[in-house]
Image 1 (cartoon, rainbow, N blue to C red):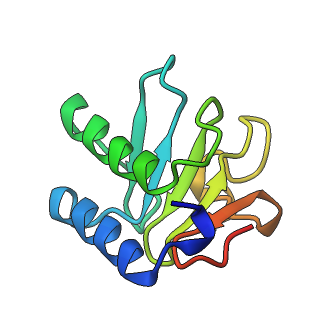
Image 2: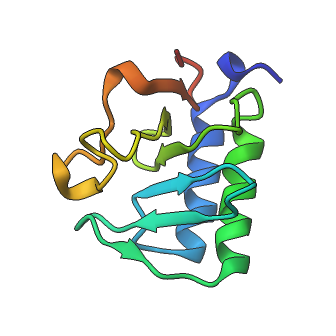
Length: 119
């Protein structure tokens, strides 16, 4: 299914499924599989420590929802809006989420939105 045909119910399902596992999560940072890491952040910009199986499960949900994304690159999924962004590089503002208090969610890095109005 093309990304631009996803519905807001898909966004809610993915967000709800992630919140069932990690109720306070607001941002999911998924690194390429070769790095094998997924970070979840709370609204206070702190990383939530989780077990590897939970990280893998959350990453799988997001990757399936955005199957057209280039997962060789790191991405940030913002749960409240269902938006997928390229993760800022380590030298860019936003790589450390509390740098700019926006989680680095710059419009220039927007990849897609689960309601179908993606970039």
